[in-house]
Length: 515
Image (cartoon, rainbow, N blue to C red; front, side):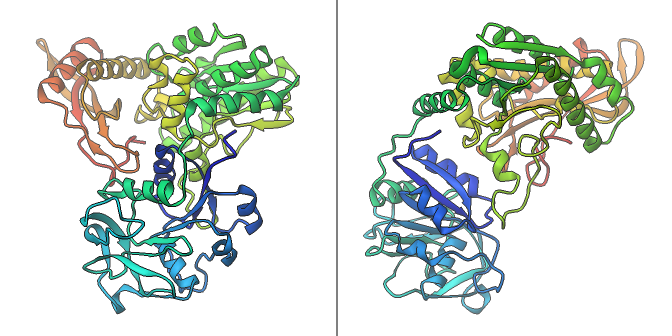
C-alpha cells in the first residue's frame, strides 16, 4: 500500500533508534521500511531500494556472534549509509579495522563536539563544527581501501568517512536523534543529493493507494473490525469505510474504561458512516471480572481476554467474514521484535493473540507501515474530526491502569471527572509542549479538612509530559497559577479527592504511564 517508485530500506541491527531513523526519512517525504539484518539478500533485491541505511546496534563487529550482512549488498550499485554499528560493520566488512575504544581512544556517549569536512559529499550543507550524539564503545582504527575521513571528534578520528566512487557513507554518531544539531540536514543530503530521491511520498498519496489496494483485496468479500475507539482503530475503520463501505462491520466493545463521553463520541461518529456499526455495552461484565484485582498485568490480561470473548460472541451473530481488520501500526510491529537481534520491548495484541473463534480468510492491517503521527495525518485526510484524530495516547486497558489498586465504578467516575477537568484546563490554556496529560487516581488516602470537617480521601496525581518521540520525556512546566486553578476545581467539583499532586519525574527513570 505504498509507492513502488521510491523506497529506502533500513536494516535493523538492534538499535533503540531504528524508529527515529525511519521517522526522519518519512519526514523528508520518502517512503521507507525497517527490515531485520538477517533477511535473505533476494528479499533486499525484491524490495528494490533506492538506498540502504545500516542502523546502529549494541554489538561489537569483531564478536563471533555479532550481526553480519550479506556482502552482495555492497555490489548492488546503490548508495549505502552506515550509522554507528552500521558504520563499523561497513568498515569491518570492506577490509577496515574496528577495535575496542580503550585500545584506541576514549568511549563517547552523549553530546559531542564534532568537526566536519564541508567539502565532502555528505557534509557539504552543514557548518564546520556542531554537536552530535555519540553512543559507542568501539571505534574504527583503519579505513577500508577507497574511503577517506570526513569528520572527527576528540575521541573518534573517523567520526565520518566516505567512498564517493562507490557511494558508501558512514557516520559514527546518530544523525536521527534531535541532539545531533545538523542530523536532519545530513540525512536529507544523503537521500536527496546523493541518492537522488524526489521526496514525493505523502499521506494523500498513501490514502488513495491504500483504498485501491483494499478494494482489490476484499473484492466481493466482507470485513470485520474490532473498534476500540482509539486513534488507530478509528482511522483504520474510516479508511476501510471509504474503500468498501457496507462490506465492513465494526464492533465497538465499550468496556466502561474509557474517558468521559468517549464511548458516545465514537458511536456518534461511526453511526453516520456507510458501514454496519455495532456497539456492545459490556461495562458490567468487565467490572465483574476486574473486581478485587489490583496487579496491573493481571488487569491487562483480564481486559484483553474479556475483550476477545465479547468480540467473539458478537462475531458469531454476524456469521462468516472473509477478512479481519486490525489497527496495527508500525511501532507495534517493531516493538514486538521485528529484527532477530532487536529486543522485544512489549508484545502487542494486534501482532499476536488473534481471536480463536472468528472465521476469516486473511488479516488486513492497512496502517501496518505507518507511525502514529502519520496515522493522525491520514485520519485528517479521511475527514475524521480533529478531537478524535488528535486524541491523547490512551492505553489499551483504559482507565483500569490509571486507577491504582482495585477498580470500582465509583473510582472510575471520580477519575473520569478529575481527568476531564485537568485535560480541559490544559487545552484551554494552550500549554506549550504538552505532549500527553492525564490524571491518575492513586490508592493513597490522606487526612484533609473541608469546611469544618475532617476528611480521609484519595490523592490524585496529575501527569503532563513534553516529548518529541515518547522514547524520552520531561515533565511539562505548567504555570503554578494554572496548577492551582486545576487543583482547586478538582477538589471542589469531584467527590472523594482531598489532595492533588503533580508528577515531575522524567522518562527515564519513570515511564509516562504509572502502570
